[in-house]
Length: 320
Ligand SMILES: [Zn+2]
Image (cartoon, rainbow, N blue to C red):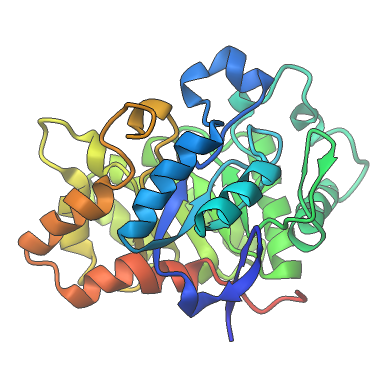
């Protein structure tokens, strides 16, 4: 039976309920506080209120996309999961360089090892997946269930390529799924090729934010490789036509098993419990009904919300 690794342990993939596929449940730490104050998400009462509202709409699982050292808190995620009953999958991996303080070891990914640096960085990810996560030296027994990595606009940097190969190494050993950040939806094919060359099972790779780009042929090219695409701009179009909706209506019938959705609501100003809008329930309260009104079948809605994320975020056959 395939499984998904949550902060409270492994659960069967068919027990996830509706999955929010790229979320920010907790973001904290000194660097974030000083540089990205609107990103701070650390009030457990307010966060719990929003998660309970989501639970009442049938959302059973959230994928937290803050990796190692970038504002993650395994301890907070564990506490929230216990408080609310929400399944939470936490990330290992590394984010964009901008989320790390000057002097962070990110800059030494290249130079700190003589050889096989990807494998040694990959071993850090493996430890987080198989033993437990560590935030600022605080060790937790909660394990990471996804490897989150990030690529820059148009081209990956030298260090990002190394980090992608390290993620490939950890995936080969553990079967852990990989979630990537694309900057404005770009460089998706470069990301896919590096992971493919590293021996990654592409059906367990989820690329985020491609709905920032409307070109259907670009999406088809990427989807043809077998990866999953995560669309999360549904609430960001304002008065413009909803490009996220248009993409799903066009592509879900062609690639029924490869699209997942999320909110990526990394600012407290998007959370209802923090006094913001539209609130995390937007996806199920407003966006999904709009897809159904526009003619998307119940079967495809179920695949996008439940079945596709369940198979994408399952562990591939690995040692653990
Ligand atoms: Zn994100």
